[in-house]
Each structure stands twice: as C-alpha cells, then as structure tokens.
Image (cartoon, rainbow, N blue to C red; front, side):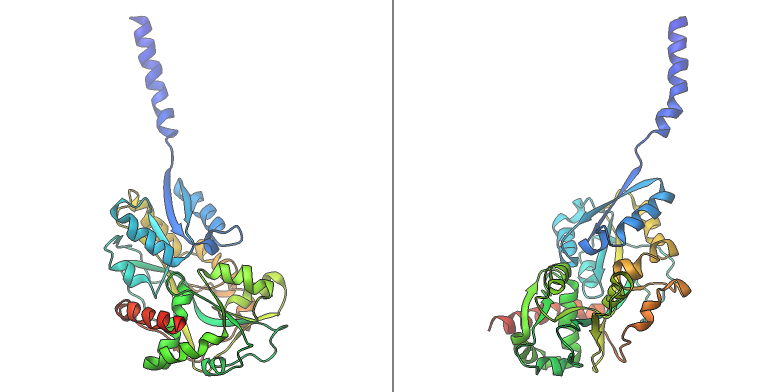
Length: 335
C-alpha cells in the first residue's frame, strides 16, 4: 500500500510538469519566396510573433501568389494551412469564391492605404505600384509612358511575369486593360516584340535575369529602388514614372476556414497591423507599410516616384473578367 500511495503521489507531482511541456501550437502559413527568404520580412516577423504567442510559425514556401491560390484550391477543406499570405487585389476575389476562407475579425482602423478598405476576409499587409525598373547603366533614357514603351525600338528588351502564375504579371495585365480597354489585345501584340522573356514568378525574373544584366528593364514595383538605395547603397536601379499612372497592388493575408488554430490565426492577423510586423515591410518586402510608421519609414521612400494617377479595378471586376483578359493576353502572345 505504501508503494502504491508513493507512486500515485509521484504521478500527481509530475502532472503539471507534463502539462507545461506540451508542444506549442504550430501556425502554418502559405507564402511566396520573397516573403520567407532569409533577406525577406518573414524571419523577423516569425521571431517577433513567436516571442508573444507561445507558438511556432512554419512557412510553406510556394513559388508565387498564383501557386498559393492553386494549392489552396487543390487541397480544399483538407488544407493544412492556417493562413495564406501573398495574395493580392488581383486574386483575392477568386480566392473568396472558393469558400475556403474565414472572417478575420480584425480591427482595420489603423490601415493607411490609397483606397478605402472594409473587407471581412482579407487583411492588407502592404501596398505599392507596379512599375518598370530600369538599369541606368544600360538605359539612360527610359520610356515614360506605356505608349512610349510599346513604340520603342525592338532592341529595348523587357522582362515581365506570367499573369497566370504571378501577381505582378497579372498586375501588368490589369494596368494595360485600365489604360487601353478594348484595345489592350492589339497593344499586347505590339508590345510582344519588346519582351525578352516571361518568367513564372517575380523572383525568377528579378534576381536570375535582371540583376545579371539580361535586360535593361523589368516589371517590378515603384518601391524596388528603395532596397538598392538603402541596402546596396546605389542609385543604379530606378523606376520609370509613366504619365498614364501606375496600377495599385495591395497584398493581403487571410485565415483558412479549415484551420485547427483559428484563434491563433486571428491573433496573427491582428499582429499584421502592428509596428512589430510592419517595421519589416519597407526594406524587407520593399513595399509601403499598411499602417503609418511615421518617422520609422526609411528616408529613401521620399526619393521614389509618386504616380500622378492611381489605376485600380475593383477586385470583383477582376474576378469577373480575369479569365477573358487572360485569354486575350495568351492569344496575343501566341500569334
């Protein structure tokens, strides 16, 4: 009896220790390479959130925003993702229509965007304008309008991204459509001669080709030069300001409906709109933060182009027209 009582007391004394040693919850976030990369915002954000959540953040890195959406659709209600991070205003309504996302329940009052935002599924985490970035050592006089680019000599080569797989690629499709309307297919056919290559993702084109001097211009963001000026300490790479205006992109995160960690996921989405998340955006994701960082916004952002016109389609319009506009682009590229 003495031995049995001793064992019960020992077991009881160990119970709180065993409870404390439980494995922390793991928050699985689907994202793209430029966010999760060692030089991107992902590592710092992971460290900052884990310091306050008693959890572990695990990034699943997919090749592009288009791949994030495609993976979510294929996995459906069996998706192991808790959060998707890397969709944008061009793809969010297509993601909404899957019915696989849950309301974020996040207070959006802190948002500072060029447009009004009241969506119940998507939390913006940054924004920027699409722009053609050029190498000033290869191209001293860049075009300053889409028309000037289309009508430039064919020896001016550009790198773009595939609108079926890349959010910047889709952004150029929407940019062309917003400027040219029904004339966009004809303009694409004329632009085709300038396109050196169409890459699957922004990372493929920027790092593997543009930075190795394969072409003097690439579709990127008006904010891209900020990284080169602040980190590389060079003014060599600049964005060409186009007189028609530039197309706006807002990047978003959302909670997956099938998540087993919804409370933790919503806590992460609230964390998105705090200084501890947003301070990693300007020089790590090289975009404008989604909230006002005040004097913490790096000075180089004052040296970027400021588009005179913001071009933007409502996400519902993009979802409705996306397939038709993609087919027009594909037809123009294959003729």
